[in-house]
Length: 364
Image (cartoon, rainbow, N blue to C red; front, side):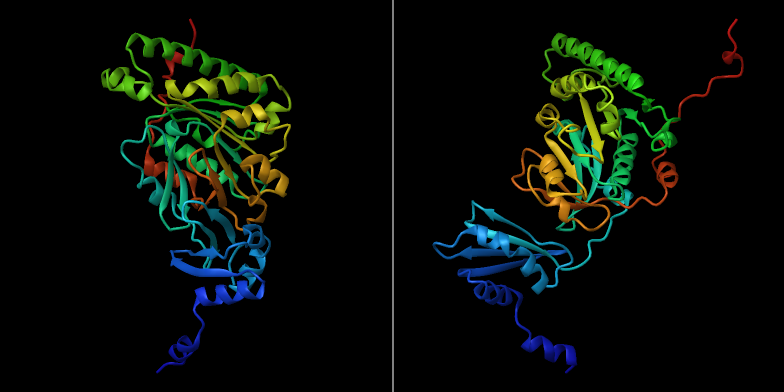
């Protein structure tokens, strides 16, 4: 018999270890169940009568240390089952390749974007038309830019029309020669003109929906031929803080489009590295039900984005928390690892813009 097998016989089971650990903290429990997933051990703890769940909240870090977790454990009550659930990461979460997530898209998705892989090891993607707007936050070096590139690449491989806002003028320049990219704005004035154009498109699409008796773009597309279908329109704004702090009125038009654009197949993704109350106002939060937070500087920033703590405890680059209206607690994910954007573009092969001929450049 090998030495490792001998040690395994006398090694305390994980659920028994948690049970005795909680007992040493003065927390009485009826039972502890464990469910082993790809990256996480999930413990369902039934508390004894009179024991408050807030006691468990205070000892989560100590439990993580005792169980040699790779990150801060996440704990939350599951009302339906009457248990307190603790998720403890037992191994490093591997970053998936973009192509692996991209190839997992459902065929009926209207505007799919690749988010990554979740804690269960399953590929995680979102259909923007069902969301329809997304708010992304993360400090410098958290992996926010790479996640945005994952979104753009996903949309280039679909039927979407994309408007990009790039105040830094270096992030999205690689995409300017593709037909699906309708505009790349670098200044507040250009962004205002672009959003106003999207608003006018939205109003015209509402007229088409009314004339065909359709409630949204998906229903409209079933009634018309392929040539006249409404293609999804997605606006992706990088460094939203640089735009809104220069012109506060721009968020009113943008939030108007975000509020009404879903029926017309229009979605907006806002990204910022400064998730303060001045940048992410109540008006923005009310119209952006989808939230993604990578690592942020403080618990205050996490509460602004997700309405709860947690994002400030993220340590790994590319790891984030996702929340929408269907989830009671944020969902952890690992974003795709994109080593070479040009190589991904070569695989996807989006249609390039037609180059003007030599003679068409002259005006007579």
